[in-house]
Length: 372
Length: 128
Image (cartoon, rainbow over all chains, first blue to last red; front, top):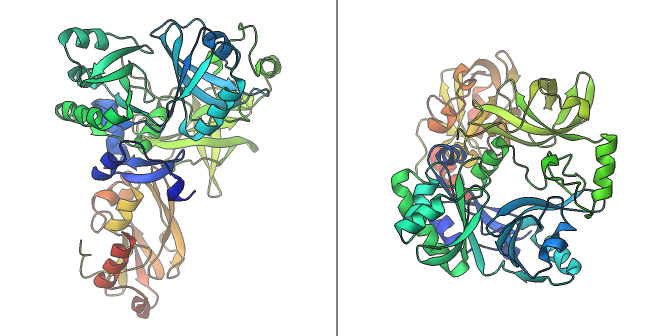
């Protein structure tokens, strides 16, 4: 893709001014790092990190029919969400594969926000538009909205400092995980979600594109005494992998089901029907499908996506995501898509790196869990 | 930033310090900065015969795997044992404690194929 066809978020100028190293990602020019991936990762785990997630697609859904309509397209339950709740979900295809993994936010009884991955945004907009039916109105908010995340143990203090009063500070910082509420953030109207993709406490601030720079700068200012660092996509990928969270294109694809991708917890077979339910029922009944295992390499050599995975003499799968993991004892970790007999915790697998097989042990996911 | 004097350089961003018939080899500050956080270095074995500009190992950062080329040929006499447990020393001190390996030169004339600090600086400047 040529750079002319790449989009920029409203915060592009901030990233360049901060020395961010810009790479193409999901159709956008985004910062992969500012000062260093490990330093930014460590800031999020110990203090706080500031992320520009404005590349993620925001679609607004309105109408009394949204819940039932969305329940027919996704694996998790939508209708049971109350206003002020956020929930992870996956749009599946007829074969049980994944169109995208998303978050639904129920803003009001009949008003919702759907957040989709940047790389799937055009596909998902076309998909929901074609399927629209009944009392469901869709609005593509990609051009006029931004998303800024503050993640880490100091996130509540930093976001609290952007709120207009002690009462608002108390209300917003008392929010439970996976809830959302409207608030004035440094004077800008925002939707505040207590959500994230790092394994730490954190907030996501959905604001108008026109307010993005002001909110970003105010968060940096409020965060300076807490050691907040701007953090790029590189740190975000390490953080999400340590926290055992899937990344579309790696653990979830059109060919990989939520079951294969380790998201069985979100598959609600009690729902009357949804796209792909029959295929998932078949997978569950047969139990014959390759699935994601978490592995920790025993030596120092890193794994990479696509490396072959062996059980004894047999090839049983391949690496899907991998990273050096500062929060997992500075070991190298990976997700591997393997035959079902290879996912048992404690099993030693072999990962082939440049012709040599290196031992790696299957562990329970997530690799990292914060002390709450 | 000027490149350290007293060293020779390759277009692939390695440096060489020649002392008699032994050369010490590392990667430049530009190389370590481009790679980002280095987490693994794979080097040839002591005793291996290596040929100028051949691929002889890899340097891995959090994000990427990069081939390592030797800027000069000869027999490997020593590898930096400290890299095994602390590969990030290459980021912190690429021209010092982060050296990679030493070779006994096969042909002292090979140095003519390497770049002066000023010539290497031109390459780094052009690369942005």
